[in-house]
Image (cartoon, rainbow, N blue to C red; front, side):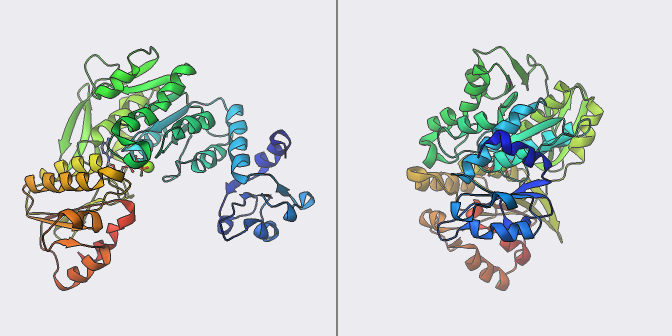
Length: 423
Ligand code: ATP
Ligand code: MG
């Protein structure tokens, strides 16, 4: 089916969904099939449930009179529709990638810009080849700025997401040791993430550069159209400030504190403040937005439980984010326990990286170290090495923890947050 012809149908739709349970009256439903499941079988039911139209990739169920449209690939059609829609939009698009801090930075930027504009931004962590098109298709007439998170775990992924989202301003939060397996080591990470820079340079769009990050400076040296921050010679100079466990920035004598822990969030906040200033917000609007953003997404989040200060950082982990998280936790006052879980997707480097982190943790002087997961178990010879979260929960039931501060950090697959109820 032709995108041009179909576009008016999309414009009439209330939203675009890929999960049949989320269909509402007026939804446009893209039926994605699984290996053992043909989503096209649900097309008729979807229309009965209120869907405006359904896209299927099984010709047998094609029924254009009832708005069930056959295409050769649901995914390709979703992406092409998103590209077509993107090309109709003239609002600024901000594109983000990087190893760590994309979602946090996306939330901060979006909250800042929302003080003045109607912003549409990536919902949750929907940052891949399906999530980016879905985000694009959620941008409608009323929106004035879009903020798009782009994730990747191998080469060429950012390049293809850029071709869909076509960012006008791009930012790489950082280059870290994450998804080493798919990218082929740290050099591979730099190359893969830099596909965003390549796109921006080729299409003469703006690059947001953290001047405190050597690799960012180096990779954008040859380019003129930049917004820079972080050092006295930048467009916007910030200094980090700290209050209790929280980090913030000082801009020309105005302190802006966040509700995020960890010095690494200084970069994330700085990027958001810089973009706020770039888009003409005054510093008090920006301050208001940052101070009223409370993470509730298990990223750099602080939670008090009785007398215990919990640092919840269980959304994900890799050697870079683990390292900065431990460094931050080291500065907490009182007794300290760390519960750290496996860092996944590290390929050949896995054992070495787990050993490094464990060694680093030991050097930090924490009162107790607990590890969860088979990778840490290989390097942690103490009785405090657990195979999985359930095993640890059984022990916690019998021996409640008595510490002033507890850090929880692990990759998503470990689901370490399950233990919160047993602390
Ligand atoms: P994902 O790849 O899962 O989408 P992400 O890049 O969106 O991750 P966030 O979800 O914002 O990253 O943050 C995940 C964790 O990374 C945080 O909880 C924190 O521990 C760490 N982190 C956040 N920002 C930075 C940063 N600028 N530098 C290093 N680590 C960071
Ligand atoms: Mg994310």
